[in-house]
Length: 486
Image (cartoon, rainbow, N blue to C red):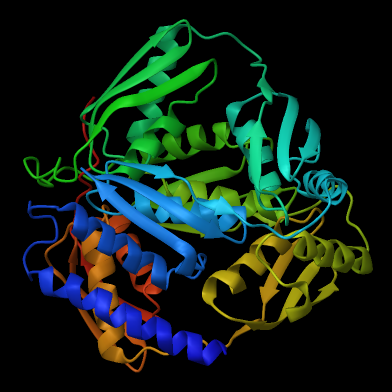
């Protein structure tokens, strides 16, 4: 049945993508062109159809004046969130209304509540939080208090990933350790926006009154708008309103990337350190940061693997960073026995909303967890690794899970069309110089990217389109367009 379904999906994709590719012109990816609602709808449906985290056969998409409405149903809350992320990350989308229903696994409220409490206790980032959990008809309500908005968001992330959860209402209070003036809040928001590689904030405006922040101005995508709002939650902020931020997909057409000096190493270092201070998974460990020629090297010790991964990701998402060498060592305060770790990892996979525990096996040796089994796609394989790495006491993970190559049937011509479509519809890839070649499932990208961030996004687009492997032959111009004086 899986093979038949895959063939049927490829047939549907061929028709959808034929429409998209026929509309595509081999001009600059960032060139201003008419962006009709029907083209946006087709693009989102196409991207959802090949997205490994969303079973999209019951998801419907409609677009009116750039506002996308998602409806239908999915089997878990993670898929619902991912569908919204895909829509927000599509060129031309101004905002997203998510009406997708979650037809989650039928579990009792007591089972769901117990699993959320265990998940919070076993995640090293949340195990010390004082959170209360109530569940009614699979609707989860979180209460309690934490010291930052990031901690509040982390607790919700853990709850949303538990099997059977249909929705999460986050009523956790944030009790800041210090009060901030509105001027301090505005200045810190500006610094965070400048440092975030996902946001080109030159046309953003910030106002604050009594800790209530209002953002205005213009950004290039709905994903950028959401990211800017996230960055605005600095210490002391009571609320964030980003409704006045206009999303214009061709906002940068009049300000093409122009030559600017590469960010100095000392500025990059300070930006990484500032980002660490806001990440509750990292800040208590104070990793050592060294920067040379835009390359960040992280050294020191952290108490868990999640902190190591988070530090690397945070550094990678900082403007001006070329690459990251993550040399952090994981040293838990209390290292559990290997059999205890195996049980913890198995339990984490068992309660996950997406994964099937029966497909995978685990082995722990001296704190390192080895993963085995067969995954249907890259997302599933990566999700198992992520869940294992978030377990308290795991020092390292070796992922030996193999992919079931018979699940998806896609020839090189179809794959090339998918990659071209992903590159075009990505709001983060605007280079006219990227060429795509495909040979036996391996995608080769050649040409020029404007910066290392665009190069990374182009690679991610190729993977998302279904590449078995990606060869990155892109050259990067010697400047970073996100370097500006604000």
